[in-house]
Image (tube, rainbow over all chains, first blue to last red; front, side, top):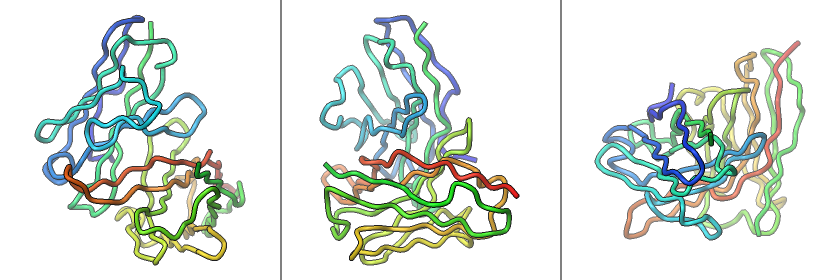
Length: 110
Length: 126
């Protein structure tokens, strides 16, 4: 059972803004940086956001991350059909002394 | 550009040991900036971190799997490996290897997976 909780699904029409939440605790999100991964169907996960709000080279600025206390969020602005995927938050957990992934959110473009 | 490729049996019998190797190309495994990790994903389910190991052999393992997991690194071959003992059907999953950035900066400790292998499906069945 994951220690990072995400809504199972989110959806929007093309062009809309979608926000995905990630709820954790003092041992993980409050104490460490948050990362986000995008997993397109049938492919390996791809790093989308690291260090709470940093985008790796090549990731569109439509994707943005933020963190406050024990929660984090991923925002997708100008939603596009190719954004239809599963999204996972992740962070180091000091209590478990290990890396934890969120439960995952499936984004559907209507 | 670094690339990672998993290899190993696609079918393992219950109670036996699952063994996978990840071959790293396009970069050296011997860097203090990285750990080398294993992540798995059961069919239709989410991601689960299994463990990470440095080139020098320092490691972290998922507490939920700790007693069954062994990780190792072979710098001469630029490979690292995973062994998971006493497997059951619950260990059926796609197994990914990945490079974990592992450093400290002004924002804090950075530990994220930027480069991933394509994944390999391991089925546990008799």
